[in-house]
Image (cartoon, rainbow, N blue to C red; front, top):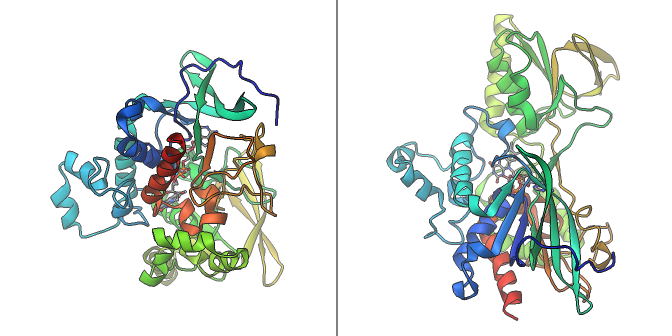
Length: 439
Ligand code: FDA
C-alpha cells in the first residue's frame, strides 16, 4: 500500500457512495441507493456520485442494430425485481412515453434493443445531477485516518469542451461497475478496416455503400447479428462468417435452465465449492457464451439455403475455420482463413473485418493498485468478494470497495455479467453499504 495521502483536497465532503462507470449496474445501484437510504443523513442524491468515461450515457451503442431484441425480459429492468413500485421501472418508462397499451399488444417480454436503450437513457437522464460524463477514473487513492484506510479519493480524468482536467471525489464506499472490455483475436489488431463488433454500427457507416466482401469472425450472438446486419445493409456484398465450430450453437433459454439467473441461484452458486462453481459455469455457459438465438440462426440458414437455390450465394458460412491473419493494405484487408479439418488455407480479399470475438470483464486491479496489497485474492489472483460484493480486505481498510457486474462472475455466477439480477443485486449492495455506515 502506498503511504497515507490525506492531503489530497477532495472537491466535496466524502460521499457515501462513488460509482465508477454508469452502465446498467451502477445506474441500478443509484436507484437502489436513492430509494433505500434514509434521509436522516441528508438527501440520498447529495451523498452519491458517479463517473462515466463515455461523453454521454450509452449502452453498447455500436450494437444497436435495427430489429435486434433484448435477451432478457423487460421485467428484469433496473428496478422491478427489487421494487416493483419504483418510479424507474420499464413500465414507468412506457407510461411516460404513452406506449403501455401498444407495448402490451406487441405480446412480447423482449423489447427491441433500441427501446431498452432508450429506457436506460431515460433513467440515466434522471440521475444527470450525480453523474459526471467524459470522466475516466484512473486511480483510487487511500486516505488514512488513525492508521486505517477510512476513505478513497477517486481520481478521474475529465475531458470536456475546455480540455482535460482532474477531479477528485472522496468516498466512504466505492462501487466498481466497469463492465466489459472488447476482446480481439490473438495476433489481430483493430485498425481502419478491422473492427471489434462493439463498434459495428459506427464503423460500418465508414466503408461506403458498395463493399464487395466482408468477413465476420465469431460464432456467438454478436457474430450472428453482425453477419445478418452486414448482409442486409450491403445488398451486393458477400459476407463470410468464419468460425471454428461446425455450426452456430443455440442459446439455451429454457425455463429450468433460466433459473440459473434467479436471485436465489446467486446465493447457491456463491456458497458452492470452487469445483462445483466451475462445473456449473461449464454446464450452463451455453445460456450466454458463443451461442445464438434460435430464430436468428434459423433465419441465417434460410438465407444461405435460398441463395444456394438461386445460385446467387452472398452469405458464406465458413465453419470449422479460423482466421489466422488479417493484413490491412491500402484498398482492403487480406484475410487468411485456415480450414481446420484439412489444414488448407485460403485468402479472402475483404473490404473490412468484424471481430465478434467477445469481451473480457474489465479488470478492477489496475484501479485498486494503491490498496491492492490489503485486498484478499484467490488462488487465481482474483479479488475475493463477499456475498454482498464487497472486496474482502485486511483490517487496515475500513471503507467499502464493491465490485459488481462481469467482474464478479467467478464468485457470484453467470447472472453477474447480465441484466437479470441487477436490480436485486443493487439492493443487496446498498443494504451492505447502509449497514456499515450505520455502525
Ligand atoms: P457496462 O459495460 O454496460 O457499463 C460499464 C460502464 O463503465 C461503461 O459505460 C464504461 O464506459 C464505464 N467505464 C469503464 N471503465 C471506466 C472507468 N475507468 N472510468 C469511468 N467509466 C468507466 N445482457 C442481458 O442481460 N440481456 C441482454 O439482452 C444483453 N444484451 C447485450 C448486448 C450486447 C451487444 C452486449 C455487448 C452485451 C449485452 N448484455 C446483455 C450483457 C451486458 O453486459 C449487460 O447488459 C450490461 O451492459 C452490464 O452492465 P454494466 O453496467 O455492468 O456494464
